[in-house]
Image (cartoon, chains in turn orange, brown):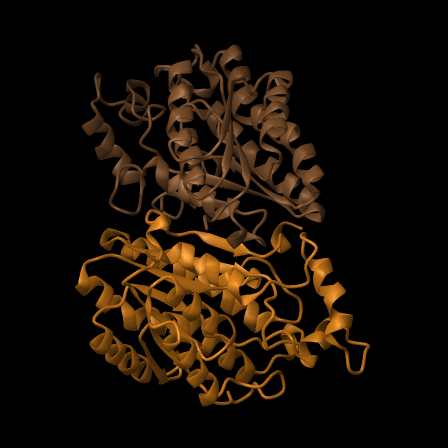
Amino acid sequence: MGRVEGKVAFITGAARGQGRSHALRLAQEGADIIAIDIAEPVAGMDRYYHGATAEDLAETVRQIEALDRRIVAKKADVRDFGALKAALDEGVAELGHVDIVSANAGVFAFGEQSQDVSDAEWDMVNDINAKGVWHTAKAVIPHLIAQGTGGSIILTSSTAGLKGTPNVMPYTASKHAVVGIMRTLALELAPHSIRVNTVHPTGVGTDMILNEATFKLFLPDVEHPTKEQAAPIFASTNALPVPWVEPVDISNAVLFLASDEARYITGTELKIDAGYTIK
Amino acid sequence: MGRVEGKVAFITGAARGQGRSHAIRLAQEGADIIAIDICEPLSENTYPPATEEDLAETVRQVEALDRRIVATKADVRDFAQLKAAVDEGVAQLGRLDIVSANAGIGGTPHKSEDIPEEEWKNMVDINLSGVWRTAKAAIPHIKAGGRGGSIILTSSDAGLFAYENISHYVSAKHGVVGLMRTLALELAPDFIRVNSIHPTTVNTLMVQNEGTYKLFRPDLENPTQEDFAAAAVQMNALPIPWVEPVDISNAVLFFASDESRYVTGVPLAVDAGAAVK
């Protein structure tokens, strides 16, 4: 008997990285999956790292189906409420219900002091990371309330949702906003036994941070910094002696919050941060 | 394969209530148990004390799961007793990986200016210093294993915000958070993780007694459980008056297992949304 047997999880940003890992971990424990991803380059992000592709999303589908679970995967942008709602509604129609939400889609842009950030960059980051999370909740809440069987919404924030991070202002603001969304939703949805919590990862070993542009944030004086050069500097920001955590570590926290083991946990910020925020 | 298979957990206050529940939940997932409890009356409490018979019942329930348990009568106010119990447990079970510093008392409500000196001292001695002594007794064993470990301190929602008329309890439980954060930093290089759990009211004798009923219903002369539930449900966001011991145990299990291998320094509220309300 899996820990989320028979439940259906809606996951945004599921083509790769943490989102794919969440889909796999929940499917391993018995859930069916509704997966969405923009699965195309995001305008303004090309200077940081490459976006997920339709092929990535297809690989998530293959891996879920290899676990003998069902998955409905759609290409959709969290900034486009209509597209998001259509994808979710279709998933619910096919899989019968939705119980778990992982609002995971996000982008990491960085490198400038706040006074030098462009309006376009602020809008892009906050539209995806904050408004996209609200859109995700907005699309799913009517289903959860109508079902009347409670539910668990897990919003992916960051250590940057709890502490300031120099030269990463739009991202930091957007991830703090996620905490505000979580706290408000937790109160609004508690009467329906729908729980809402955030997860706050330190650096996670995915394409979002394992790229030269991010390494340069930590090693501005090195022309082409490598993962090996960056690792000790990442490690120095954590209390535990690790440079970053793995996607499965966030997935295990998502699984815990998704399962009935956490049936009375709501309004909580769960850090998976190797002690980053207490250091 | 259990989620804490092959590990050994040291649990204080394990005769009944949350402590017994933690022992059983961890044993269900493959852990052996070192259990201690004072098993004696404490004058501050308005509820009946745990007994040696209670601790024996914990032993029976863990053994019924085919796990091993070393149970000893010991007081968290007495470091020598505590250390002897842990040392003996590790000698018999071979290692130490998990600590649940769970022992604690509820005390008697008073306005801060009316708390008797002895009651304040005893509250802090059990609910805060006892947690420190538990860690102090366990840390050398976990370090000696060289495999890291997980220390879980039971605080309370009263460790996150105030409740009137129990400032000794609130202060001790806030102190546990400071202890947790400091231990988390000190022990991180050895991969020993330290986190705290913050329950709302839990359905045990510590809460289900006339003293707590009166704390929550000062307006009534003889409040019943039903009167208490009506007030308690107001405190939580989710529409429930209290959580069950197993809900805290499931959080302990998450922190104890390798699923949370990079989680340290976290205060986790298991509180039906009381803190966010």
